[in-house]
Image 1 (cartoon, rainbow, N blue to C red):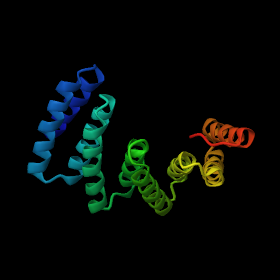
Image 2 (cartoon, helix red, strand yellow; image 1 turned 135 degrees about the vertical axis):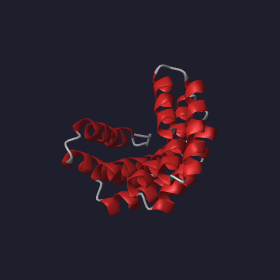
Image 3 (cartoon, rainbow, N blue to C red; image 1 turned 45 degrees about the horizontal axis):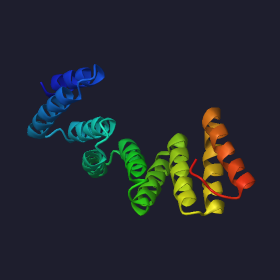
Image 4 (cartoon, helix red, strand yellow; image 1 turned 90 degrees about the horizontal axis):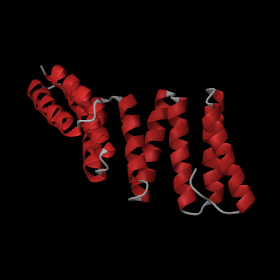
Length: 179
């Protein structure tokens, strides 16, 4: 029943009915709690975070994602943990840059353990953006170059080219902006 409610919630979400989607997600979440399905509980919190983010309710989105992150960590689910850390870091970037940096570093550690090169690249981009926001051009460039090399190795040339442009812009202007 909980999976059906979740699926129905996703359907409502896709047709642009976020209030109905949230109601169904919450009902599914209650059932997953009753059943003790922690993985589904974490995933529902993650889905709610994304739903709230689309509605531009960053406070609720952060709260839901923090809950999901804690559950992924408790269960040792490193893939979703890395994704949650990176997503939460992106959300905190303009709110609390110190918190964002800690979460990008945590994501980087998780992705290194998983040998996930694309995840590592995303974490390096985030760390480069943190350095850029702080005005540290050398550190920003170093992080972006590390990310670019990983993306090139994966054949993600658009992402690598975007970072190369950001690095070139720093060299040309002598100042830093976020990639």
